[in-house]
Length: 359
Image (tube, rainbow, N blue to C red):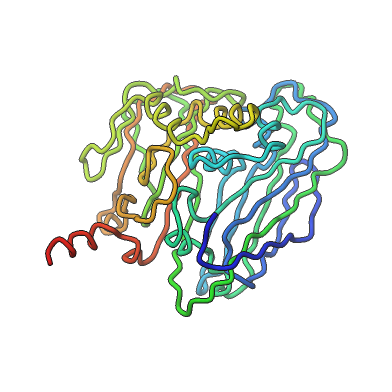
């Protein structure tokens, strides 16, 4: 990813943990961060009797990055490993070959190196706008904490008689991509990537799901489950409707939104078959509404189309999805949201164009 500033890369000391373990890494506040890549080294001894719907991505059960921001704890990332891979696929980012093979397979007995890349600027945003998405860690009161929760055996293998087993522990390594910001008083945005879950034990017509407030929203993805081992768009019937102040913004069947999402997939002629399979698995049975772009597009520098939910904080209600959902004991939808906070006036194009046209 391009930048105005010189890149620095380093690796934190690795930690190991068994299935179900929680590991915590202290992230140094030496430079603003462009990205964090979480790498798992896993040796599978016995494959799962029933592989969970998250497949290999599910080995990383939860990722939390939080920091002390002026006396309060602020969340920067709070999601599962699959959400990180879905985010990459939605923004057209290719996965490395080893990760792609792991996602496309059944976690058979073998050694796996699985990477979870999280670039704080969505990949479709170009320089210089991408540089205001750098995480300004030096401004925090304490070193932020990156919490890694590894999946349990039951979460990887929901079979009544699970067989999934590892040889030894999982080795977790954190790679940091940093930028040496040399411009005094450079403006940074605060960002948050969060995941929420809504169960549907009973069938609901026009169920309301409200967007978290406040912030400027980049995208929202829906991942529906028909069971612990299967994703299925069939549990959402009719149109998925996005309403903002009771005005209809989107109204499309779930599968049609999914078809639109495939336009974001990065599929040049020379891409490896395993990578194409992995990207397909990360987009099927999902529906993502992207407010910046619905095509495979890089270099976006204006944030005019981001969904601004800041004015809704005084109203008590914000944008909502209206969903018809078929309920069952295991049916649920996982939603993830990407949003940012702060002054974006420098990254707005429309006021500049209007200003120029009025001269």
